[in-house]
Length: 367
Ligand SMILES: [Fe+2]
Ligand SMILES: [Fe+2]
Image (cartoon, rainbow, N blue to C red):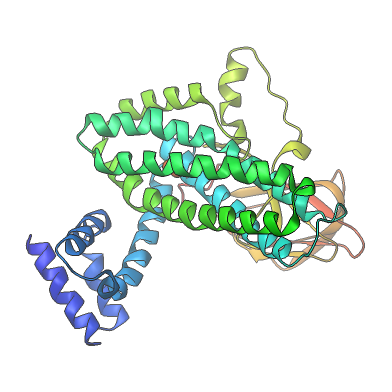
């Protein structure tokens, strides 16, 4: 209660323009982001107009993003929450692409079988429908455990949102599949409505889970053994084809005498925060493997990695730089790059450049 009063005071001062961003951040730094979310909710329920919370919200979002980074680092790859957060990153990537493809299709006046965007739309809708296993792990593994511990409100809302989104995603896929047979104006109208709904609401949904539900779950479930049991239940449901660390179950399968063969070409391509296209191949605590795909002349700028890395050139030609030196390399070459020395990659002119980047151990959780 005292905290809500304090927050209300802060809000008034923000509205009068008396508090600068740095001060807001300092004050928020002392408040638990999850409790702040609950307090904000209370302020709205008590009659504070949501627009008055806007000043606070911007700083709050910043604090919550820091919290998300902290959680990702605090949980190891393979932890159910770590996997869910990583899947969210992929889903957000699909939503960005869906936004771009939809905008381009809206600018057309007729169906065009030669336009690749119709195929892309089908691919993106399929991936979004594929996310069902992600939602099933939330609904059948995480939520029941939270409900058992008295956290019932957020899971109930999340389930309702899953249902609404599930129907819209299915509709998007149907639209993508019959684009050629529909009246194009009709197709555009339905596409716009469906895609806009999914893009807006799924982003919101993911934001709430990342910043409220998952942090609350980590707090409410402190026992390591319980997370181990939840992971087994999650493994039994399975993963999506875009789950980073797709091969996370590969260790278990190999131990049980089964071998999973993954063809790089079958893995989904996403865009890394550094720019180039990538495929996430494997994530285990001991190792992380990423396939970096550079277009001719494209560059992965020099950066440092806190663990040892080796590069295996899978296809094409290019340059590897480590420290001040650089070397021309081609398919079949392997280069070792010790930790904490800046390294970069560049594709040769006229040649795509595909490199397997192997980090050992996996730097996630070591920042
Ligand atoms: Fe969800
Ligand atoms: Fe989710």
